Structure formats: C-alpha cells, structure tokens
Length: 140
Ligand code: AMP
Ligand code: ZN
Image 1 (tube, rainbow, N blue to C red):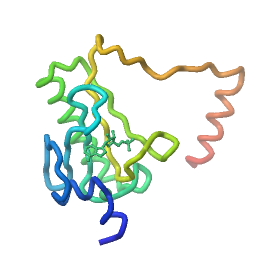
Image 2: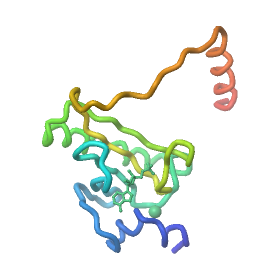
Image 3: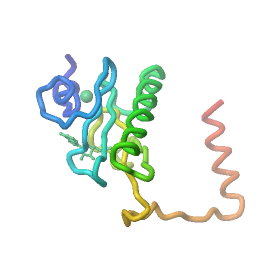
Image 4: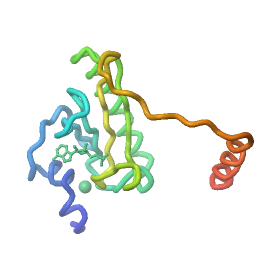
C-alpha cells in the first residue's frame, strides 16, 4: 500500500482502523457523518479507492460517487426533514480542502438555519468575456 493511503484518515476509516458514524456503504462507496458538522446530519460521501480530489479521479468513480450522493441526499430530506442540502467538494488547499482523499460534503439545509451564502461580486465591462475565453482555451 502507498504511503499516502497508509496515513490517510479516510482510508483508515474505510479499513476500519478509525471509527466513524457510518450511514451508507457499498462495494465502492462509504458515507459517514462529518465529525465537525456544519449542520446536523452533515455527511461525507467517499469513494473507497484513494484519490486526492476531483481531478485525479476516474469518471466511473465520479459517476458512482454522484449516484450515492443523490441517494443519500434524498435520505437526508426524507429522514431529517431537511428542506434542501448543499453538495460541495473542496479541491486544493486554497479551497479549504484539508483531507486529501476525494469526498463530497452533503450539508442538510433549512431556510431557518441562519447560514448565509458566499459573497458575490460584479464583473467589470468585458471581464466576463475575457474570463470565458481563457477557460475555453483550456477546454479545446
Ligand atoms: P475538507 O475541507 O473538504 O477536506 O473537509 C474534510 C472534512 O472531514 C471536515 O469537515 C472534517 O470535519 C472532516 N473529518 C476529518 N476527520 C474526520 C473523521 N475522522 N471523521 C469524520 N469526519 C472527519
Ligand atoms: Zn485515502
């Protein structure tokens, strides 16, 4: 086993070496409650195969992860009476990622939960088009 998998906290949870409050498991995916929840029921959905984030993960694994996130998201709504949920995935240190094993956050939301959304800014004239050109050039 690679060193990074040996030391990875989520790999340790998957191997059963570290306890977790599991809510779902199948052959490819595990989901457990976040140890420091943003809201009650905050769940992490995690592929069992170690990759560090979205960019180094095969498409098949991403498909399995999204499918499980949909199923668990529905369960949060049904079982906890959540009015909605955020599905987020931090990628890279600058984004706030601290565990470098790919995971989706499912954060149950209520209109009354008092959490605000991210601040928005405005584009200056022509700025959006320049931005889009840069992004498109990397997609060709
Ligand atoms: P991220 O910023 O996306 O890397 O978030 C990592 C998340 O993992 C944080 O919300 C932590 O609270 C959570 N976390 C870290 N260690 C554990 C653990 N042992 N069990 C459950 N959640 C964890
Ligand atoms: Zn890992």
